[in-house]
Image 1 (cartoon, one colour):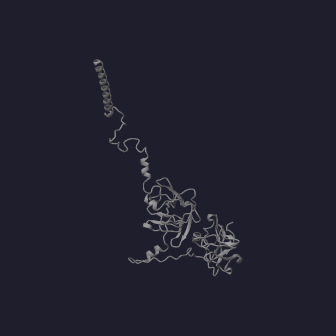
Image 2 (cartoon, rainbow, N blue to C red):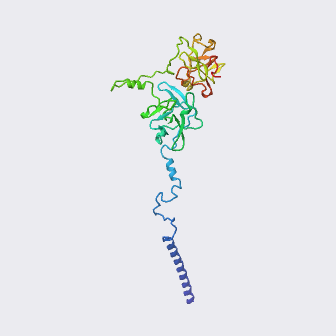
Image 3 (tube, rainbow, N blue to C red):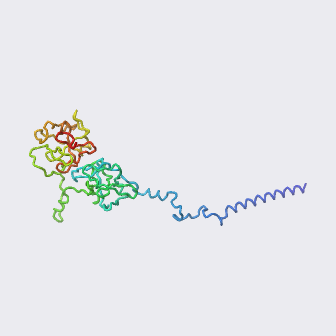
Length: 351
């Protein structure tokens, strides 16, 4: 019995020793550094590889993500659509987009070659105007003046006369020109891409005695500069020859008269309201016996919703176009396929 008891104890001790040896070997193999292991293995707490040290730098997209998050990235405005020339009471002819928002140019850009130097925060305040398939020259705008420049983000920015075009974020309604003269480097665009200035501003400055401040004269709110024109006496409506359209009706100051395709004759009604009236002011009534070259029976008038009276020709409301600047100009003809100059018979001119 004694011998069997000792044999059992010896067996238990042997098994215990084997278990301890196995555990010790496992710990040693896991904790020891791998001298011949893979170079890609990295222990917790070790120093990471320097940025850019290996060819897979940026494979996680971190580099491109950082670039796209930079201030002003993607700060590009909407397309211009059909460009329009608007007559501003202070600045004269101003280039606008289809919605009537003023387009600007930046003195720090270049036109030859076209180059924009407005990016980042600048582009957020002055969103570049995108050039796409909807861009089109309106009346009074030379197609050859329009172009584009590729910005750093790959978008195509509209250029006029080589100058990149922008809008101003502080212009909140069509017709605003709050960006004019900002920083002495931002100016509204004229139809040919040159910068506009208040009429007479340079003359006033040059006429001032040295060292003497001058007050800027208040601009005269006229629809168009009063041009040199034939003496028509008391004639209030007459006919002039237009090279493209033939004979068109003008008022006593040579301003071309227009019809709007959305107006109706029976009943006679004007459908030009709100912002439309800024570009197309209603023509005032005239006396039928003060017309020349036109049948007096075509001349009438209608009362507008605000109580004012408007000239009608051939039972249709008549308007001026704010973009006409010279005697007999008919730059508004054909705009949006709805506006037409009027021939002596009271019909659309040129047809």
